[in-house]
Length: 172
Image (cartoon, rainbow, N blue to C red; front, side):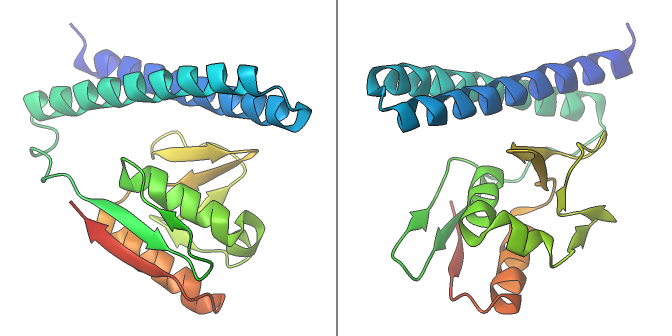
């Protein structure tokens, strides 16, 4: 058995699921604009199931990498909670999801113009990176392959640079 092929297979499945989720979100938005809320509700439920399944596959990938000794056992779960001046709070099930949504709320273009890089990779890129985890938002990819603390610090840097008063907390 080629262990690298198994790792690549996990990555392929996760990437396909992310693409499916992004397509589902776009369709949901289109139906919402048309006022077809029955379809929106069905797509939202489908999206939640896809996301849940994608998280399970990612957990299996993590377990496989631990089994191979390629990574240490993951640290206890920690997430992010981001509070905006308008009262909006973003607190998704993963720090990556919260991070991506917070950047969306701040404004993709505004953040992209800051030209931030993480691991020598643009924070917001127009192409998917072959090695690092990213969340697709429209035609952009947001770099999410980092520790929760680093995501928190990056959001604080962005808010300071753009003079936006947000509060970013690490939560368990």
